[in-house]
Length: 367
Figure: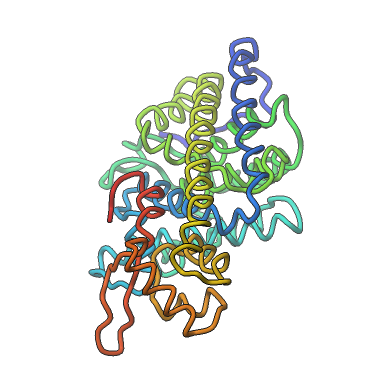
């Protein structure tokens, strides 16, 4: 099989007539979600469970097996076997790469250097770390089963000789405008997967580009729109849509799938954010009633920022007096707002979980 020769960007043969009925509803759903997002006072704290969930689901598409509560537990010092810890580290790296890029976008648009920096963070100290983190490939790669050769591969990305020019064109396309931001986002994601510019980690970087691109184009007030839940739940259609581009030149079908994914996930994300905001509002009065503390707002923000935590870490993060924090923890445990993941033992502090928020983030009853 020969290396694929992608079409130049911007595309000129999209059937906009077929897509027009989907573009409006998708944009409306994104706009409603963004309106809700703009009402959140501190989204990086309030919506951290959404970021955790996206990191878990995007990594799961690539075969990583870990859950939101396991990642939060790992952050809090819970120990896991080496295989599970490796999976969790990949998810932690995904989260770090998103954070790095989000901060960088405050200074300027997505460029090739930022993409390489994201990849370097993503692949640090995990499987694939020997596959040149942070460097675009100089060799031919291919996609297929573990024992496939280039002759039996499902897809062979563009030749490394053509890759620098194609990446430059890709970066210019991201910086410019097309017929619609969401259509352009669909093309950006797929073209990145087609170029497959790294030896590993292309899928995760490609999915990270989705919220970052929407934020750059001001379709979102912050880069907190996560599509991996839909893509993971419709994995075969996701991959088939990408394959149809190279096999049949069907960009229109891919964009239609992507617009439906955006619309569906915008509704799901809206409902999840509403659930988190509702829980936050409910907990405002509950935490005050339980702790009788003037520091209730700081206590509540610390719980939402890190819903599984070491008791000693909570004292530091909440920024309130040591004795006040310890008293608050005891009262919240007595009221069953907090549950123990691991009791204190010797020099090891207790690991506690804000049960309702973890269950909401995981989408199932964990505690």
